[in-house]
Amino acid sequence: MKYKVLWIEDGARSEVSSFAGAVFTSMKYDLEVVLDVSDAVRKILNAEYDAVIVDIRIVPGSASKWKNLYSQVGKDKDNARLGMHLLFSLLKPDQAAVELENIPSWILPKRFGVFTVEGKGEVKDELEELGVNFYLQKQTNLPHTALLDFIEKIINTSVGNHQKGGIE
Amino acid sequence: MPPQLTEAWSVAYLQIMITLIVFAFGIPTFVYQVIAPENIRHIINKYMKPYLKRIAGIVILITIFALCFVWFLHPCTTPIRPLNQLLGAIIITIVLVATPIFWLFVLVKFLREKVVKYLEKEIFESFKREGSKPHEELIDLITLGERSEAGYEKEIVLKAMSRLITRLQEREGYKGGGLEYVLRDFDKIVTGKDKPGNESDFQLSIGILEDIFNRLNSQNLSGVSDEIFVYDSLKKLGQSSVELNFSSQVILRIRTIASTNSDVLFEIGVSAFNSGNCFSALAALDKLETLSFNVSNQNHENAKNEKLDVKYQLFGLMAHFWTKGGSARRRVESFLEAFRDEFTDIDQLLGKAVDAHYNDARYDTADKLMEMRAELAGA
Image 1 (spheres, rainbow over the protein chains, first blue to last red):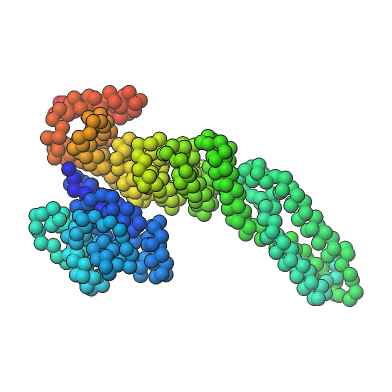
Image 2: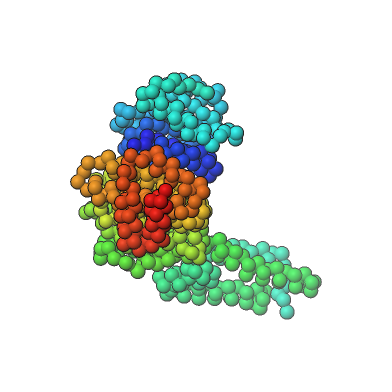
């Protein structure tokens, strides 16, 4: 069995193919990619994942509550930071702008990682608040195995190897 | 002799023309008679011909009358220099003819939407009256989409299809069947050889198919006939998208939606591999591997048959990688080495896979499987 991994990412073509290729070649993970928050929520509420990788700058998709939130901040995915809102909805519902129903019990901070262009300083406080320890910044000099390595770190924690995670 | 147009008269004529332009907004169908694109003109004529003829006649008469009035009936009271007289007449005439034409071009977009909405309404009414069948309006709407330009024009048709499908699925008594004729040629809107859609059109189409799945799931309808047609459309969209060399996001999205359908994954994988799109082929192969393991771990009654079917597809795609040689073969060798415990009698499995693909007339895959089997046996 492969570990199930969800990657919420609407990035450019190079980002997806260059990072996902190494994951497919590894044969270790069942990687699913969704492009927006609505699809991500649908997936998360319907299946269990061993790791969920979240981009901060993502688009709302078809669900009205996410579209409304997106509209309120001027329809700009950089400012909307819907990925962060999604994390709050799942991990800190009492502080979330969008309320989700029937959040599964497998949703725990240790299964989540943030892979984004935002610098560490821009997200550190929020990630600490959420209890999410895994963070990787998208940079031009990242190796093609960056996503694979990142997934392995999360999986090692989430499935019980107790490897210590941490903000890099 | 050109008409004598003073400043006051010129202004008066321009005001009249503006009124005519406003009037033109109310008769948008005239546009199609004059400038409707060739590819959709017959559809427009089919549904609006009598109306078009009347409107066209009225507009042509008004234009002729306006030109006659300016050139022949215009009152001439103030003497004007001949050069000014000629220039004034030319300018007013050009403006009189060019302005309505310009506005008619602007109105094309509006009219296309109007026709699409008309067809959408008629199709739904036809379904209500006569049930599921290849309604003429449905064929015309898909043809219209197929012949439309990528981007805005195809988007209008796709959104109409989306609304139509939603209404059909939300109708009382919907049991997971009835979309056959809606979905049978749905992919042609974006996969047509003459005017294929752009990546955004493909994403929109895939989203429509995904929404169908979501509605089926929300109504606890799975394994129904409409699901088959959705998978078939996804397969065609995936095959076309790799041939058009779209971004990997398209394939990754289809791969996620069709994650339990080995046939879709196999066909897309082979198309991608043959198109030289190795990333997409690998994405399909990786998912087939996962699916093969998942099915192996199922305990339900049909698991045995399903398991074999998935493995035939998996090894069929692997054979394409294998016979390519080099790094593609290395990927297969790594898999067989890593999971050798899963495939204890690989020779027998390959033999059955050959037969399965032969029986499905996938001769190319069957031949590659035989080649792979012979090489593995000789190793």
